[in-house]
Structure formats: C-alpha cells, structure tokens
Length: 342
Image (tube, one colour):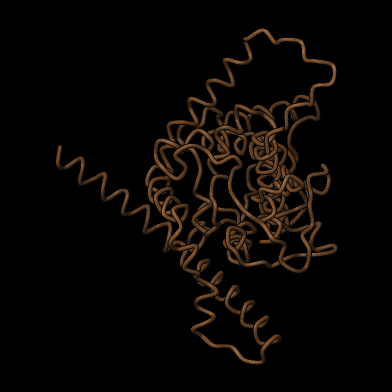
C-alpha cells in the first residue's frame, strides 16, 4: 500500500517537473520567463514614456500587485493548478471519442468517395508545415466551438462558469476548470483534430506529421511563449486594426471575462481571433485600458471553495437538465426574455 502511494506521489512529482521543464508544455519555465520579460518590458516602456524613468521596485509592484496576490480568487487558482495538473492525464483519459477511430473513419470515407491515397509531389518539409498549420487551425476551431457551446447551452455553462468565477486574473486562472468541463473540451478537440487528421492523411498519406514540442503543436508553443500567459493577467496589451481581427491579445481575453453585458459571449478564441471574426463573436478592445470587473454576477454561493467550485456545479447542471422535462407555462405576451448565459 505504501509502495503504491509512493509511486503515485512520484508520478505526480514527475508531472510537475515535465510541466515546468519541457519547452513545449503550457507552463514551461521558458514560456513563463518570456511572459515575465514581455510584461515587464511593456510596463517599463509605458512608464518611461510617461515619466522618463523606471524604478524596478515600482515595476515589480505593477507586475505583482498585492491586491491580486492576497485575493481569495488567486488562492483558489493555486489550488486548481495543483489539483488539475496532478489529475490532468486521468481527466483527458476519460474522453469517450476515439481520435484514431474517427481519423480512420474519415480517411476510409474519403477513399470511398475520391479513390485511393496518392503520394504527394510536395517535399516532406512542405507537407509537414501544411499539416502543422492545418492541425493548429483545427485546435483553434475546436477551442472556439467548445467555448461557444459552453456560453450558449445552460447546462454546459453551469460547468464552465467555474472558470469565469475568477475575480482576479493570473496565469494560473487558465487551469481553473471544472473536471467535467475539461472532459468535454478534450472530446471536442478530439473530434476537430481527428476530422482534420483524416483529411491530412488522405492528402499526404501516413508519412506526414505535425511539428511538435512535448506533444504540442509547435505553432501553439510559439503563441504560449509570446502572450498566452498574459491573457489571464491585469496587463492591458491590446491588438487593434487587422491584428485585432486576427489574434486574441491579452486585452481581448480580459474583455471575455468582463461582467459588462456588452462583453458577454465575446472573444471566444484561444490564440486566433479569426473564428470570432467570422462568426460574429469578436469584440476588438480599445487601445487604452477599459475599466473592467471580473467574476460572475450575482456571485455564486461559496465562491473559491471546493463545495462552490467542484460540487455545486453538478447540482446546478442537474437542475438545468431536470428543467428540460418540466412542462413550460405559457409566457405572458409582454414578458421579457430570460438573459442568455455568458
């Protein structure tokens, strides 16, 4: 028994080590250092333009404000990070969609319609670059679709709003996810990636593959090192114009977490704003910081606790499903429609 516990603790420790010390992971040390340097450089530049000098002490306070570090929401984020990192592999192992089975099904369907796979005349490097780009776009679309459904379908929103219950944003907020929310996310990504991979296998055969680091698409890894960590922060870096319609800047995602109704259901993408632009869910941020508050209104009972963030969402989601089977009373002619979930 003790040996099994020891093995389990070693496995968890190895997950944390892999997370921090593998270049391609979401919380790699290199990506965190890049985020710190970019955020520090941005704040230093703005302060220098306004005041002509930069003090390291004030810069450190701006990067790590006490109001955030002492907030219960940040404490909850730390707990989510520790828990979800430890069980991440197990949660994604619960995915019911078979990635390989669906890929093979798409490939066989294309062969039945268009004939057998023919070798591509493109050099392998070009094939792999195309495959990498296509699978990155598939990931981005899967992310957007998952996000869109969870903001539009009430039973899914009850799970997803655990993420939106954060009242301050830190890079750890990205791990603030209900386990069922993560399972659904994994299945939707499996579908979009498998469909794309089936098409890729038909176009180029099994010899092509995506360029990846630590299992992550290399294009995604680049975005993680550039600004993905800054999306869940208080630092207002806004992309405008064409860039604001192509990429989800930190300010884009901060708007997504806003309690202002005009921002509800906006900026649902991960790295790219393209799908938001195409489907009408894009809100390009202003150049200067907008006054935002984060969280859920009204605030959920026992926010930032295990009961409020892990257990209660099951009950709320269940009550939504029970409501599907209740007879609905006819609404009064002038009754206002119920507000859609964010």
